[in-house]
Structures are given as C-alpha cells and as structure tokens.
Image (cartoon, rainbow over all chains, first blue to last red; front, side):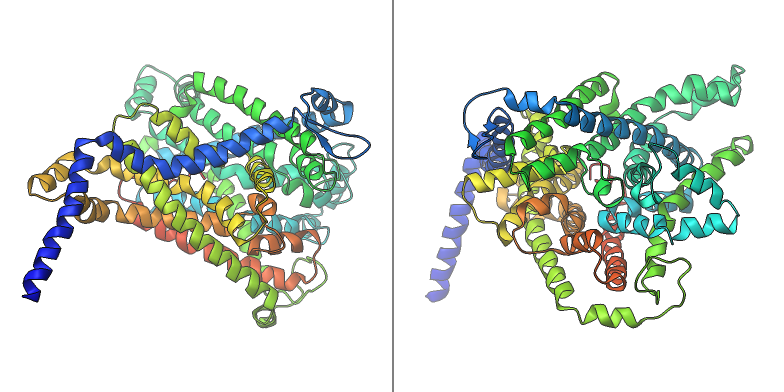
Length: 316
Length: 270
C-alpha cells in the first residue's frame, strides 16, 4: 500500500517536472527569460547601473567651501579636469601606455612567432604554459619580484657590477626624465614593470593571428622569389597586424587604468589611476574622480573603434 | 610536416628564448628570496640561506586571517560566477538570440574596463545604497568579473555539443531537466571545472577592485599590498609571495589539462 502511494507520488512529482519541461519546450522565450534574468539583473542592472551613476557624478561638482557635492548639472568639473596639472597627468599616462604597448609588441612578436610556426609537440606545450603561468600568476607578486630586482642593492646592480658596467646604470639614472635615485623610483622602472606584467596579453593574440596564416601563403611567397625579409614584410606582418592591435588593446587599456604599479615602482608624479584613487579617497572629490575615469573610457572607446575597423576582434 | 629549410633562424630562437627568460626569471627569484637570511634589504646575492622564515610565517595570525578570508571570498564568488556564467552561456548558445553580441559585451565589460573603474563604480553604488562594506561586498565585486571566465569556457563547450544528442535524448522520452542532468551536464562538466578554477585564481589574486569594495578586512592581496607600500617584515612577505605563486599555479595547470583537447582556456580574456 505504502509502496503504491510512493509510486504514485513519484509519478506525480515526475509529472510536475515534466509539465514544467513541456511548458518550456512550448514557450522557449520563457525559458530564455528564466535563464537570462539572473545574470542580466546583476550585470545589466546593478553593474551597468553603477557605471552610469558614476559617470553621472562627473557632471556634478564639489562645493569649495563645504566640501560637499552639489547635485546640480555643471561642466565645472570637466573644466577642472582640463587644468594644466591634470592634463599633465593624462599626457604622462597616455605616453607611458603608448611606449609600453610598442615595447611589448617588440618583445612579444618573436615569442609568438616561434610558438606559432616552429614549436612542435612538447615545445608547443612548453611555450603555451610558459605564457600562461606568468599571465595568471599573482599580479602583486610580479610587482614584488621587480621591487627585489630593481632595488639599489638588488640583482641588476650586482649583475652590472660584475660586468663592470655600473657606470652605464649611473649614467642612465642621471638622465633627466627617465632617471632617478634608483631604478625602483624612476620612470624606467615603472616602464619595465608595466611591460613585464602585460606582456602575456600581447603574446596570446599575436600567436593566435600567426597560427591562422596558412603555410602555403609563405611557400607561395618564397616560390615567387621573395626573400625571407620580403615575405615577412609583405605577407606575414600584414596578416599578424590584427593580432598586434588586439594585444595593444589590453596593454593600452591596462596601463591607462593601473594605479598600483606606478605607486610602488616609480617616481612620485601621478598617473590617471593614482589621480582617481587620490580624488575619491583622501580628497573626497568624487565628481573629479569620475571625470578622470571618463578619460580612459573615451580613449579606449576611440581605440576600440579603430581596432574594430582593422579587424582586431577576429584575433581575440 | 616542415622541411629542413624551414628551420628557425638563430636570431629568432635567441629572441624567443630571451623573451621567455624575461617572463620567468623574476618569478624564480621570488623562490630564492624566500630562503634569504637578509632581513632589512633586498640584497643580492643573499648572504645566506635559511628555512626559518617558513616557521615565522606559519605562526603569523594576520597571514592566516588574510588567507582564510581570500579562500572564502574566492570560493563563494566562484560559485556565484559558475551559476550566472553557465546560465548566460546556455541562453546565448541555445537560441539565435537577438542581441547576443550585447550580452557577450556585457559579460566582458567588467574585465575589459580598467579595474579601477569597476571598483569605484561599485563603491559609489554601495555607498549610495547605504550598504556597509563587508565580506559580501567583496564577494559581489569579485563575482562580477569572474562571470566572464566561466562564460567563455562554457560557451566554447556548449558550441561543441551536437544538437542531435539533445534531440536523441528528447526522442527517448527524457524531459528537459533529465536531458540537462544526463546529457548536457556531463558534457560541459570539465569546462565548468576549468572555468571555476580560473575564476578562483582570478578572485584569489584580485586587488584593485577589492581595495574599493573591502572595508576593514584584508584579503591576502590587500595584505601583500600593504607590505609592498610599507614593508614591515620582508622575509615573511617573501615566503607569502612564494606560497601565492605555488597556489595559483595549481589551478592553471589543472585548467590546462581539463581543456587542452580542442577548446582554448579563456586566458586571453583575463
């Protein structure tokens, strides 16, 4: 008797789930809504909502006397953003991002090229993991490692001392803009660490683009009498360019927004990220901080627009 | 496949090897410094080697507290990201949906925008809604940008499940839930595991968004950041740095072995 009841129950439960399943089958849009509602509520409403709220704040201003935010539409904060000191910060950050991007592309290309065209079997895996492990290992630990390396008593000084090249380092550090007391408090140090930390983001898309170049194109080029240099210049490089642009999106955007690297390894002059952090924290000027965040968004928007036209998104 | 004349030029070999060395030597140095006897500076070469700092680090309650908090945050953020990321991937892959590009963009946005923007946006949203900073605000921030790695892995796998498998299951009388349980889940299982591991590694390491969404609590990266700005006990930091490297390598290797046949690890979109 109880067994029968249990059986009936089971059929019933199965029936409810079955009915629900049938309902979803007949109304796929309802299923879609059920699936999409939670992630879209979180990302679309909460996250994008807070982004808009932040951007909105850049049109408010801070009252100079009370230090409170006055909720009135104004462009005063943007006028403040365009003052000389702040423009300096923006210019400094953008130039750093540009140099870092070029340097990463130069270092990344041979690695990506070798991994894509020559590495086979075990070596292919080694290259893959050789890029993935630094990419995923801790960001702070990577910065910390460079603090050890670039310190005055660290390995760079030791190594150059062994080679009797100490004078070279001293000469470099005595240069005006790029120099400083030691590498770890100079722009040179900031630059090296930026290149190091973002390098894997450049290698992966270049490698993806190069792997898609058909071998017979290269063979055709050399059959037609192209020297390796010509083949590289006219066949390989144009086909790899979307990959380089895709990688540059990462290196450029990440440099624009970073505030930890220049704070730990670098001179005391601010970058955009540090300015945002200082404005929202100690200065309590959220409107100016919000206006500062608009700068990377606008730059990256323009960058992405150009990149898309160059076909960079196919290489991601 | 490749003929002899296609052997790599020597210059290229050297450049590639030098590049790889540039990426790995700093990480190896971390391992060396964990054993140094020097306390006050970053002297190289280390004057002597010792294992005493491991014991010192082991007995530090603040390191343990930070580590526990990080593991808790990463576990819960990963769980949330797994659910939301899989839902998104399922919806996007099953239908020719209008606006799927928009959904992809929405998922990628928290990681495509500089972390400082995500951080400050969430912070001002929390303070506007008068939510006090707590464990949960950290988790919410992390889950937001962890969704993308789960989504990327799951979407790639969903694309490979052939539609005829699902139709066969339905033809044999299984309802939608049974098909999900017995056909879809076993097929996407390893992709979800890989995505989950990467999400865990991402959250475990995150510092930029965390500085904005954490109150007084410090996760392991925040602890590390404080040591970087104001070094108090360098040897302990060295040991912790080494442990962090080891802890993050394991999920990466695991994720690689789970997804190596065919689809890519969602690394390019970190």
